[in-house]
Length: 499
Image (cartoon, rainbow, N blue to C red; front, side):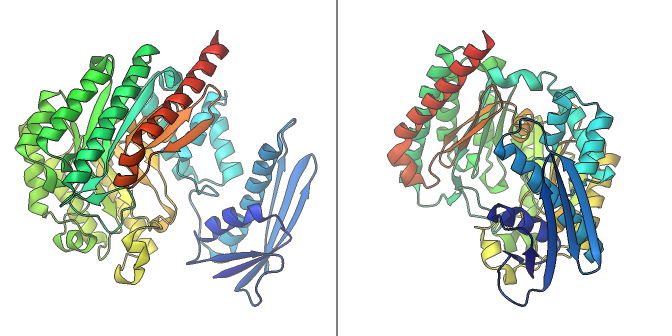
């Protein structure tokens, strides 16, 4: 679908207009002003900017209008954000009129919608005022606003001091190895077979990072809220390597007994052994993931997961019997070849296990994944079926007393839906709340690990370690030093501002 835009010359509009168009059409291209000839549709814009922004969008016999006041003393960047959102509002409205499709998330195409609601509430708006703003300015439907509020309420119940945790940090530790790489995956994940030399070198670098970051946190008397071992699959390494890694954590980090939560993703059932579970138990770690993704064997084969459905169930019971008291499981809506019946089967099997938390993902065609590179091989369900599956998931979680507690969205997500984490009461993952709501610094250690440094004003500085093990092994000391420099600058600035 080629959409030609008249009346907007600024190239900064191209990306947001394309993201919104992708909600309605497959493989859209956008051209501004003098673009290619013979577009599929042409949208004419009238844009006036003075003390307020007035936008009119015309598509054939459909029209949409939006007006928004510009904030006083706003920077050029802040002004353009208001202009961009106003253009997006009129654009989405006219496309909804033209197609008859309603986008429940309105103009939002970003990852963290609940962060916006948190921001409004922190600024002093009442819930009613915040909801009205989300509906009027962002075109979010009542259904999604209600979901956002339920999640925000749950987060503040679980972490009452959520808005005051900037003085602490959380730690993400990335283990970039898996038994195999899933077709939908874009995480740093390398097949571990035959890579023992890379694993040894990587673990040496990771231990160095943990020691140096731990020293800095101790010197500056900064506590850790949560630690999360992700990847890849952290249980891909041996039990002995895991044991040494957790010993390094306890040695390097201060007040480990005060850390609110330590999680280890054991997502691939084929990596779970009694020996590894005993190591977790030894270090008082009882929160893990055992991720089926689907309970249909043909699906697991199609997406490159080399474990069986029976193995998922067997390893869940093994983990439970060896003291894992907080187990998360993931299901994915819209996997190739799956429809409503297959997803209902996955829910029925989940009911037999009743994990403490369940994350229901909607498949996203991530740009660098095998699935996206070879879309013709992977037939997925229709938009209506995807929505029906999501409704089934919502109904099942309500009936089984799971509550939504975090949410995120992705580009090219099927049905323009969302990923939602549900949990039984008091079993929520604090780390998932911290990473989604961006209320504190999260330090990423390990291969491909991303850090988010958040200063006193909420400004975020992104910093990522190399994704490839050899590049990480060659440069971990340099990257550690850079992280320490950023930490010093941010926390010294915060201290100066709060004196």
